[in-house]
Each structure stands twice: as C-alpha cells, then as structure tokens.
Image 1 (spheres, rainbow, N blue to C red):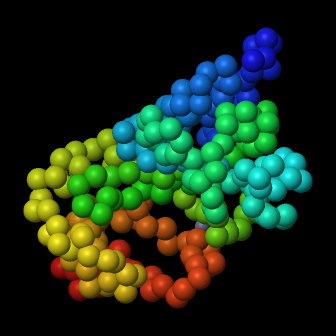
Image 2: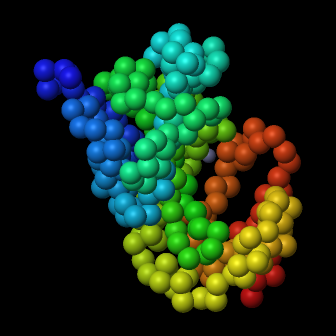
Length: 249
Ligand SMILES: [Zn+2]
C-alpha cells in the first residue's frame, strides 16, 4: 500500500460535448468500492439513477507495449485496451475480457490501464430489458485519443454525446415509465425462453410491442441510435428497424 495518499488516487475525466465530470479512483479502497464510487459519480453526472446503470466499458490506447497475459486489457499488439464492469456486487470477479475470464487485480487497473488525467468521451445507450419491464443504461467510455473530433465511428457517436441527450435519457429513467411497463401484460415466457435470432426482430411480438411503446411515448430516438457509423463494423447485415410503424395512426 502506498503511504502517500495523493499517489493513491487517479483522476479521470468523463465528458460529453458540453459538460464534464472528474471521477476519482481511490486506490486505497477495495476494488468493489472503487467500482461502486465510479457508478455513483457517473449517475451524479448523468442524472440517470444508479439502479438503472447496468455496465461501464472503458477503451483507450494501451499504456504499455505488453499484451495478455502481462497486460490483461490488451489481447494482441496494436489492439486497444478495453474492459467492462457491471453494476453488481459482490460476485468475486465480474470483469469480462474479450477472450478470457482471466481475473484482474486492482493493481492491474491502477498500473496497466488508467493514467491520471485520462479523458473519456461518454456515450449512453438506453435500453429496455427483454421482459419489457425495466430500463437500463450502458455507459461507453472511449478515450479522447481514439476519437476523431467530428466524425462518428463504430465505437463512438458524437450526435448522442451531449447534455441535452443525457438530460432526456435521465428524464425517461426518472419517470414512471417503468411502473407503466410493469402494469402492462407481460410477454409470453415461452417466447422469452426460445432461442432468439436477428431475423426475429422483425416478427417477434416482444420487439413489436417494444417499438409500439417507444412510439407511443415518442422516445425511440433516445433508445436507438440512427448514426450509421455505430453499425458499420457489424459482421453481418442487419436491417435498420423503424422506430415507428410507417402506418401508425
Ligand atoms: Zn453519430
């Protein structure tokens, strides 16, 4: 343990185009508390309730030339460093790495991923649980070094990274929409159990119902990104779904 308290903290910045928040990683705490603090500070920034925060992923340029297993965040030379944490406690280890479930230690995050002053741009992906009863948000944090100043890419969208967009998502997650959803008829559990394919999106009653709800509340644009770039590197052709039915009355 480092005796110097200052040296035991790393400050990173999370930003959208017109707002930012500094987040302090206090390495004197245990990993779960650091993780909890990070979710809490992000919730303060976005206004989206902590209970609706599902996960956070971080990506950046690697801080060393090492690759796995020396650097558990990088799996091949030239790749970006990446990890994801979920807002769940206290599973012994819930860090999901691209090709491995190799455990990371707190020291790995401190020494091999974060650097003081790291600045990450934020995308928030608002989603509805498959059972159509809960809303959740995925936080995607991409280091500024990986982002073109104006162009969107497969990993970051400028159009949805601003305070007005966040405020709208916060308003939706703080509304009584979830109560409304839970009061609605539930999808048939048999539908939920069977294997699900991409093609099913067009005919699946759950997806149809979901699109109807989003259309009725006129909030589809805060759930589905229309930025083409986000889909550009998918390994399959996927039809872009209409948020609203064309024949909606
Ligand atoms: Zn975009």
